[in-house]
Image (cartoon, rainbow, N blue to C red):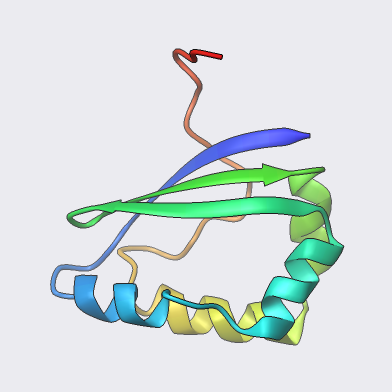
Length: 101
């Protein structure tokens, strides 16, 4: 299993819209994510900064499976309009510096 921390940033003024629209995700998107190995995906927000914590069997395989999935394409279009730059699916995650287990 892979654990990733990914950082994205909102456009100023989009915080409330993002929180409201991201309170739930479409059932077909959640199903596709679970079918392709997502065990959990958490998003934390600090002002404009978003931190995604992802637990997934294989992140590259997940992104390949969702690349042309209609539910993911619609979701990315909906969310990317609120981001300062599109969500980078390439897997560029934040490096782990410290962990207490």
